[in-house]
Length: 602
Image (tube, rainbow, N blue to C red; front, side):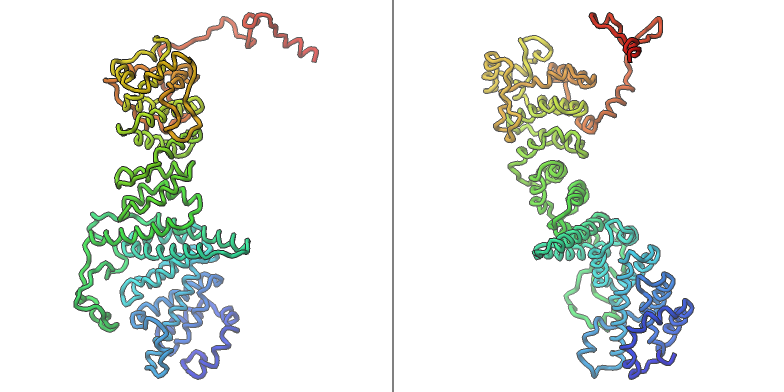
């Protein structure tokens, strides 16, 4: 044990030999030896050389018991002296004639930095056991709490998050779950998480702009690494609970807090004054409203920086699904999302469907002007939308978007006719939604009543109220349409392939597509069409149909509704004798069924 005594000259001579024999010495020591080294380190400064030895056991490849024992000893050693250590080691190196005590503390600071780096390497290692990683995480967060002269040490926390984001851990690793469940309930931790993730997003954005490597393999590897980092950033951002301004009592990880208003009397305070007068400071804690305002600013910066990244498709979809509920209500200025949402809406397909909710909120609640909104919405009406995962929300938003009475007649007619044509190709559940949407359109926009199919002045679909006749006569195009149908019966001028609603010629068409649904093979569809005809006949007493009652329908829901439906008249089949064949010869005159002869000849 003579080599462990604090002799400066001998210590310098033995330093180059430590890396060579470190692994051999570590293998020779037992768990009881580690406990002895730790107890000696805590009792006397004479055993300070035990500190580098204990550090060698905090690695991912060390046995968990050894790493845990070293961790507990070093944590007990550094926690009480951490406020006395200098903030960095550069000052002692620059001044060799400094006080020996200051040099000693500077050396301890360097060892603490090594200790902290070992803890971070261990906590982001997939080789270590989950229980050990949880203990290491708790130790790091304890240093975050008291590492900055008793205040929140944001540098340590930023280093931890940076290591997590850039590590090879998966997006669903237990470390992210532990961090979110145990620490995201504290307001100050959420505050610095926003700040750190904003910095990480800007760093990744800079790497994306500067990634021009010609090597294909390196480019693919860099791309995969960035996508993994983006996954983990989204996991962390989405797990932070939103803060309401009405919360009066905030839960802080550090008791001194961070949300303070600085007084004008003192702007710079020495380190010694901070340690002695931390409780007598003139700083005033912000109110819950002021804290919520600062949190909203950091929340906005973090999300806007994150959305500038090249998001993978699965992350892109997850963001769009929850954006209108979990992000927009808590942004300081939601209109900042207009570029991101309009780009998403222009992509088309499922991405546009999921961007519709957030874009609709910006248009109706925050004054966003988007001239091509209805053209893009019209382009989304494809048969595939009726099988999409988020079709229920889409149909409800579609009904809301077409609710305004200020829509021009050609636009309402184009949507009405496009939906009617789709009713011929979609499943029965989709046909029910279309009938509900068409019903509401005809109720809201009397100027498109000329689309109601007329057939020789008879039939249920030709009976119209006085209000419909007046609107038919007042519409300029409807009179021309009537003459057109009389001259060329059966001609439909609607252009189903046109993407611009203005050029579809919908006002020159009719809803013959809906009329064909009266003979639909699915009974609920045919019954619903008959109810639509009855509602058109008594328009003044008919309310709009709630689209949400049909928007999430499927074959299963239709079947379940049918088997629960009470039928007054049930068709019965009665046989005096048990039938022995499926068809009789009387059912098909001129045909015979001689299965026995065929089997005999075979």
